[in-house]
Image (tube, rainbow, N blue to C red):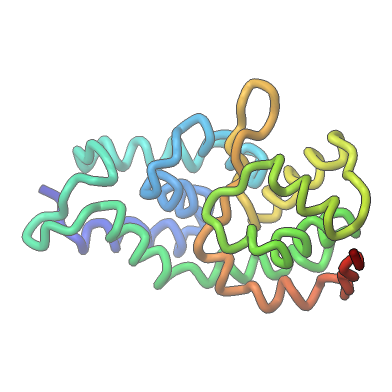
Length: 200
């Protein structure tokens, strides 16, 4: 069986060697996210799926079958341990995302504002239709489908969301837990919108 310090050492090496794509890929794997979705996210964020190849080889080398396998001695699940170590080492990733906030365009700011004001941001998974409905409620107009998709993919590219892709588009929008650590920085970049309730 694999020991906890082996996992910690491997993840620390990803950070030290600036292999953030592998570091993030392992986090996604620990959450039970499919290889197909991980590949799509990495391809968009890092222009490569090398991080997935790296963790696949490392996981196989350690003979780990899945996130629910147990660590030697403590019987903790690998997924839990990976996320625990991830949160301890996540600062370089958060720094990278924070730097990317500088380039947010109006459409991205408005969609992020929608997520936060509608409380969808608090959910681990968001249905695209729910986000569209919330956007319409806040801004009084619909976002065109093409603009909506482009905006989501940009937000994924800079590391704020993950998109679970389906044949016809995006099936689910996922909010990585670590994003909540920089929510205040995100909110500082957003416009101030006053929602006026219609009188009956």
